[in-house]
Length: 85
Image (tube, rainbow, N blue to C red):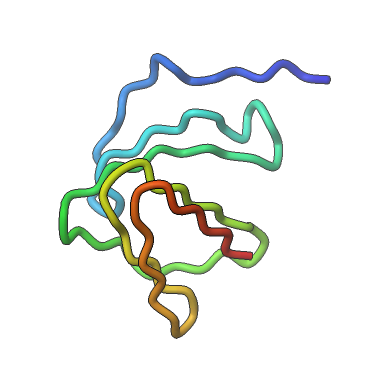
């Protein structure tokens, strides 16, 4: 089994598409899992995108977010969890 390394000391970087983003657990540690923290400003939107071979999971730490999945808008608030296959 390979060692798992948490990126605790990596600072958040600003990305105009996402807001502030920090990879907590990356593909270098677990080949098929990536854990990313994203902090967005109220009203901020990301670009539309699609993952053909990835399952995304969202957990809302605070605030609220609307996630568009195909033609549905899904509203999540603090403590909500969503899996998008």
